[in-house]
Length: 123
Length: 163
Image (cartoon, rainbow over all chains, first blue to last red; front, top):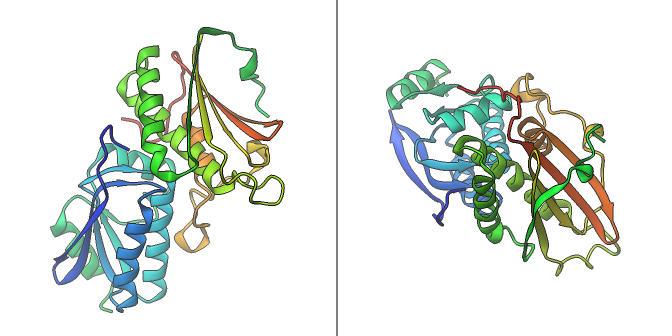
């Protein structure tokens, strides 16, 4: 949560042909439905290999962590994966505190993410 | 309950209270309120951000579980009340809602080391509060519960992942 209001926007692009979701702003209990909808849209369309770029995220709480954890579980169950891009120390610390740094593949940039997705299967 | 009884710690400079509608849209205002007072109490920005996250989690808990008293509807219009008190040691924050009290120590800790398929989705809020703050207590009130978070200025608590 930053000091000024910044409504969450989820930009959708591509990394090596895979959908890349880039939330811009804060993910908390108020805004998490926006992220859930964006992720759900991709997964509902059968796009099960996803990248989430957290570089423009200014705040993430436990509801946001739950959202991306649920999305990765759904992607994995469908035979895909959800890879994170993050170098933000605060977000990385949150992932470490909650043990999610061992659950997610966390990459430093899009090239690493593309390589990780390529190595995690072909579905 | 934690051994430390936060209520026994003297308030040294009064209390500031904010009451907002029980609506997630107001949590940013709560965050600004708490951050302002934490800075005034002398916490550095890194700790201010953590305190803010803990209070955000407390408020999210209140929004999720704060309407359980009575028939389940009587708390819908009740505001969320956040009280910040400067104590001799640091800061004490009380988050009051209409939900039932619980003992945070009895909640099952999330399986933070478990693989994805064995982890429960959610349930990280109280865990995060306990990792960040020096004490987390929940007390029943006449019309609900009060979640009391304390943070000491000289807290030796090291949060995993710290630089």
